[in-house]
Amino acid sequence: MLTLETSQLTRTFGEMTAVNAVSFGVESGEVFGLLGPNGAGKSTTIKMLTTLLPPTAGHATVAGYDIARQAADVRRVMGYVPQALSADGNLTGYENLLIFTKLYDLPRSERRKRVNDALAFMGLADAANKLVRTYSGGMIRRLEVAQAMLHEPEVLFLDEPTVGLDPIARRAVWEHLSQIRAQTGMTIVLTTHYMEEADSLCQRVAIMHHGTIAAIGSPNELKASIGKPDATLDDVFLHYTGDDLESGGSYRDTSRARRTARRVG
Ligand SMILES: Nc1ncnc2c1ncn2[C@@H]1O[C@H](COP(=O)(O)OP(=O)(O)O)[C@@H](O)[C@H]1O
Ligand SMILES: [Mg+2]
Image 1: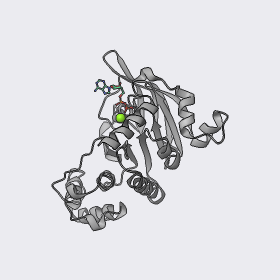
Image 2: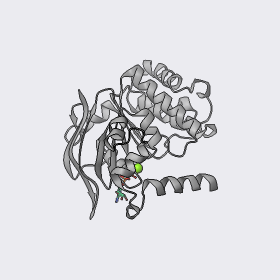
Image 3: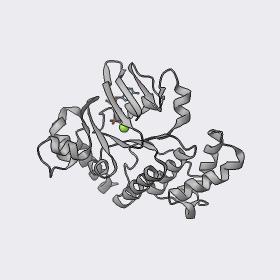
């Protein structure tokens, strides 16, 4: 059963086509990855699916609701972890989540339990009463995932959930996401430019390039499709997109720039 479906979904900004007639489906309970370099159109796609940005053309449904005509229903059944960090450093983890139980209009009698359950689920029970500004980047990210799950959404959208995290923190986020999927059956749609992340976490991925989908399938199908069973997703990515320096954000350049930034920063 498809939980999410897009048909010719398109978004332009002036002359620039950020997302160009993209069509794909996501199965119920699947972890689906939108993969691609900076500027590929991943965030714009997620923003349309989460009703934050109206499409210029095309359609999409989330849990059966049309993103344009039934936006309020879509918002009710989805959780969203945006690309930029959003937790308040001057509040504790517990307080951050409590605010969201009010925002989601959860019954007062359930709020405390929902918050404690979400914190425990994401491995943050011990840190619940510490100020978020004392959290590591990985803990903040996990808190944001907890926040997006409070209302038990059917579909969880995460935009670059592990960008900027060290490998250990990244792995902890992956493990928790896998656990969410296993225990709740929630459908998860995430974007990433880490091929390794997509490979270990996603049942299926769509490789985005210049606003279009260059290839779609399970990591193993995609590797087989380029005739190299021992290929990595990096190889798949380069095969389908070319190492296009004109894009101003090829995967290689992006990862190189980030490695440099991490060394310097
Ligand atoms: N609000 C906006 N106004 C103008 N251009 C935008 C806007 N948002 C995104 N873009 C452009 O659309 C393209 C896709 O961006 P984005 O979806 O953020 O890519 P990704 O998330 O894959 O890095 C980029 O060229 C970006 O500069
Ligand atoms: Mg983005």
